[in-house]
Structure formats: C-alpha cells, structure tokens
Image (cartoon, rainbow, N blue to C red; front, side, top):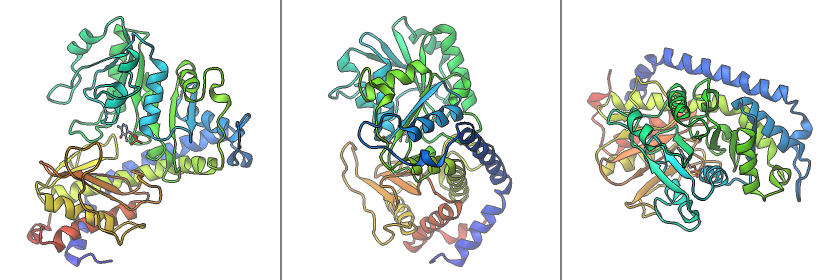
Length: 422
Ligand SMILES: *Cc1c(COP(=O)(O)O)cnc(C)c1O
C-alpha cells in the first residue's frame, strides 16, 4: 500500500503507547452502543419502521419512531429528525429562527460561533438573517486561557436575552472544545441569572464522544448534523433537534408550517440509513477519535504543534496539525486523499472557494459528498498553515489515511526521517 517500512515501524512504536487511551474509548463506545440499542428496543423499532412514506407523510411510523429514539438517547421530551433538514447549519438556523421572536436577544457566552452561523445571525449581513427580523445578538469572548468569562457573562444577560447558544466543538478555531461537564456548569450559571433563558447547544462533532450529552446537563435543545457523528456515515442527508416539547414544536412549525408541524414530511426511502447509521454511530465516532489521537501523537512527536495535544482528553473528533508551510499542508491533504476509498486517484489542489478569504485545499474521498465523519481534511492556505482533519468510518482506515499523509510528506522530501523515532 505504499508505506515505507521506517514509517510503519515508527507508527507501531507510537501505537504501543496508546493502548490504554484506546481501551477507554472502546469503553465509552460500548456504553453508547447499549444506550442506542436500548432506545431502539424501548421504542419498539420494527421492520416496518425501516420503510418510508411518500406525499404528505401522515402517520409515518418510521419517522415518528426514529424521533422517539433520538429523544430517548438524548433524554429530551421530543426530537425532530428529518431529511428535510439539509445540513447542520440548517438545523441550527431552524432552531434559532423558530425559538426567537422580534425584540429578543440571542447570546453566545463562548465567543464567535461557527462561520456559517454569522450569516444566519446577521453578524455578516445576509438576506433573511435574524438581524433582519429585529433579533439582536451579543457575545462574550472566552478568557485567554479558554475559560468562561463569568463576570462578563453575568453583565451581558438582560431581560431581552431569550436564547443562549453554546457551541460544544471548537470547530475550526484554536480554542479548546468544551466537555459536557463544563457546558453543564455554564448552563447552570446562566439559568441562575435567567431561569427562562432557552439554552441551545451546537452539538456538531460532539455526539457519542462522551457517555453524556449536553441535554443531560441542562441544555433545552441540542442540535446537529446527520452527515457528522449521529449519521454513522450512512445517513446521506439530515439534521436533528432534540429538546423540550416546546422548543421542538416551535422548530417543527417553522420547518413545515404553522399548524402542520411534525405531522407532515414524508421520509421517502431514507429511514433504514438513519436507523442503521445511528446504530453504528457510537463505534464510528470511536474510530474517528482513535484516528485523531493517533495523528496527534504521530505528528506531535515529529515536532509539529497539534491541537488538541497528543495526551489531552477529547471532547470532539477534530484534530489540527500546524505545519508552517503551504507545501507540507498540501502534501498532507494529498496523502489523505490518496488513502480514500472513493476518488483516491484524483489530486486535490488549493483553490479560491466562495466564502473564504484565501485559497483552500480539501481532501475528501467520501461515500457521502462532503461528509466529515468520513476521513477528510481541509486547510486554508495561509499562516500558520494548519490542517484540520476529522473522521474515519473505521479505525483501520483512519490509520491508513494518516499514514498516507505522512508518506506523502516523506515522498516530497518534507520529512526528516531521522526524527522517526520515539
Ligand atoms: C459542521 C458544523 C456546523 C455546520 O454544519 P454543516 O452541516 O456544515 O452546515 C455548525 N457548527 C459546528 C460546530 C460544526 O462543526
């Protein structure tokens, strides 16, 4: 498969040190696997649930049961899980727009939200943004050490604060990702000041990384994408909102129509992939986590700066590696692509893409287009020349892709082979 024996020997040494970390990940995966199975059993998922409806989709047994399964997993009153929710940004926009009214204020106590939400909120002006509907926005940045600025948060909460949005994952920033426990502390603090504030957590990339979810520690709503963790690599589209009956009903009335809500929305033929993907999601997430930890240790020991660090606890599946040069970033991404099951024969190149202020290179050889629970990497070609990568439907494949990335650096003369030792 084109991996030099020195590189293979080096990774074996790296891997030996990770046995205990991997064992803990398997333990979490086992817990979450049983959590999912139990929810499916308690909701009496049956063969009929795997079939879909057409047209209006009245009495769609599979759809309604799947939503009950999600609600059980997240320990919420209700859930909305639909192919009509097109992606994570759509799910988040839906949750916000349906639970805010003109005159309300949206508050982020964790700094700037994910890029695509800037236009949803109206931080960057956009048609149909919350700002256009008279919903204001306020944020408090994290402290220099990545902690919550409780003083400033207390001052920022006003009688108009209606919804508090908390992004669990760092996304493509350099701040730490929050643990579920930290999120619980933040929510408790907010609720003490304003008990009726709706606390929403952007759960993208965080599902099944821990045994608890933000909805177990006080979140009124958790929101995410099915082409990330909970889709298990099989869901070809979709998003979810799990939360209080009121929050979910608001979202359903906005997704379809006031009065119709959850009653309509045919599932077509998609439900088997939603169920089976959810069933696989705990082990798929564990595979992606192992890949991230493996890569962090592999590259950190070669002298590159990595976030999170090799020995740090994980709260999402994203790994960043800073290479410092465009050549190394490109070589890394081309190596990831060369390890893909689909499109391994094509070579990604940096390109000017809409919405970015520098050329971007993306490696993705996925069964589901753009799926980032599958092994994928992307990087803006600008200082500090860092690559963000994530995913891997199986640990064995994540490992292979990462070895191909290192091999790609070596093949281009960008790797000092003397460093290939612990
Ligand atoms: C991916 C992601 C989103 C947006 O999801 P899309 O499916 O790409 O629209 C939002 N927030 C976070 C933290 C994410 O990782």
